[in-house]
Image (cartoon, rainbow, N blue to C red; front, top):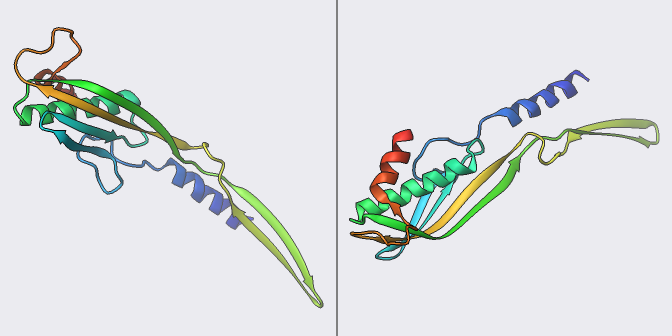
Length: 161
């Protein structure tokens, strides 16, 4: 029974471990961070995958920050988000189950005990990913107000991290 308790404690401690960074940066080996693809000279697809301790608003802010950085690096003044998708995926968690079995083989008997399983969302985390396509421009922004000022985004969001 002592071994069963130690194994259960191992699963609980493992579920409490922090997964992934919470800082801004390019995608790491686990996929957390930003990525971007240029579609046209003034159009980019940007994604940001947050670690399990990042709220969706922060993940979206980091995607906007990346859009602002790209716009400024390419000499653009503003950008418009033409499509946006925010998705959350539940990962991790811990589960403990137990099994017990016996068998009799002539003169010998055996007993087996197993521990394992998955309880799904108990202790799991939601990992948010934001994907957006942005159109960038120079000079005066559109009059409809549906744009972001690249410099202001970089200064405001970038200033918080």
